[in-house]
Length: 178
Image (tube, rainbow, N blue to C red; front, side, top):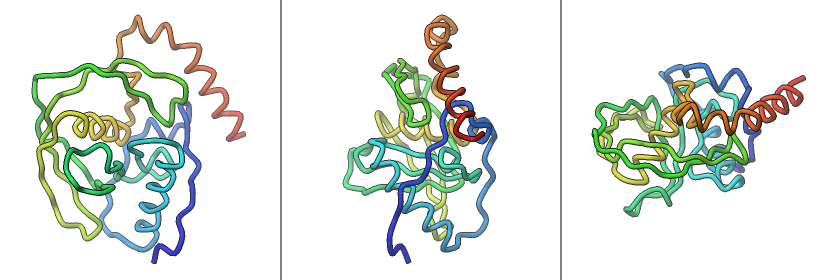
């Protein structure tokens, strides 16, 4: 399979699919496998570190994370039907951006450690604790699958400062769809 991968269209703020909770995956076929390869290609093409399926117009519960997010030697990773089981009370604040909200970066508080479950492309269940940057990226992508943007996690004062930019991104998204 995976003869070639192609860059996919990234949906931006204002696209309704990004606010809908994604659906679980019960079977993995060639089109899902191809989607994963295409998502990894798209993520790197757009200088991202993670990408969720709904960001490319697929309302299914999966996301990919680039190898640079991890402290170990694992490569690019796929998380299918993920779930955050537990989160540390200890948080860290760092700047985040998003391929679906181009040009906006804000400080976001995230749990420093998460216990996380997911399936791979063989539908085998995994559970692992992630910390630091990997935990942050996973939380960001997991939020996407729940219809949540990082901008939903910032203060109302900060939201006031970016409201105009968000409106412009949403307007350009609607213009593309029309």
